[in-house]
Image 1 (cartoon, helix red, strand yellow):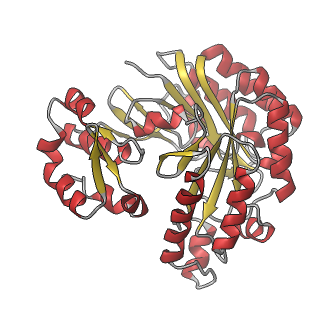
Image 2 (image 1 turned 90 degrees about the horizontal axis):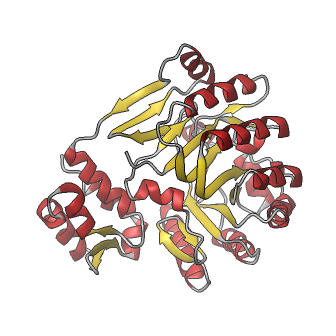
Image 3 (image 1 turned 120 degrees about the vertical axis):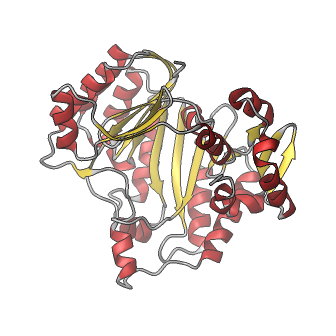
Length: 373
């Protein structure tokens, strides 16, 4: 076992956003304290305690009150030694100065904020609880508390959003002296309010061409700044790339703790039970809180290596592929790679296969080409 990373899921939110399909619950009347107790028990089952990265996501971890947050932080500190990157997700309006100081006092050195947009009308459509000023306040608090790395999430291809709207949000983020920007196009996921509205004809999205134009604009604008693209949706200043997320893209193993969390340990990909009470009951009955478990085959792991690794600008390393799987990338995927090169979707440099900009725009189609069956 060489696990270096862990993810912890806090499935509670002060409000449920219209587009979100993550495992989350409105925090009011939820058994939050019992959940933290169960989470602590699950964390203590881990064999490896020395980690390089820890990521606490949700839901919204900052939906916890100060007392609950400190209890969680103490438990993480007493269970794991984290010698590298320690990230907490946060909503701007929940990130008070007291909370961010508390996070920093327990070693949290990276904050990832769900900003999505600076435009008030779009924040309302998305069901976000924060206002534009909250974004500026939260970044200021994080800086005051000496958080080393601050990341903002922005979304594009939103209902009623124009290129000018997206440009304004992007430029505001750039001017804030932060360290990392993640930017994603809206995907309509089943079981979300947006999906139901769209099916009933009550939601109008910009056409796909505008979405592609916004993504191209994102790459062009940030390409002229000190933010460098290192993954399809992620841009960082020097030394601020997300080391934790690279664990996923490099197809390495990691722990997943909490309701709905996914993990990859000893060749097993697993996901935990979603409903909070089901998760708590399983833990209290000394059972693994597992919903699904799968051991990817040799072929499936090679597929994963390609479509996860191709998300990164650096791409997939042919030498590493050979040492990891005992066969060459060309032998397994040579024909696919050549076809995609001819379409200007892939290129090869320094023994790495990478997406072109054209390939990034239709990334999912490229990834599908690497499915062997």
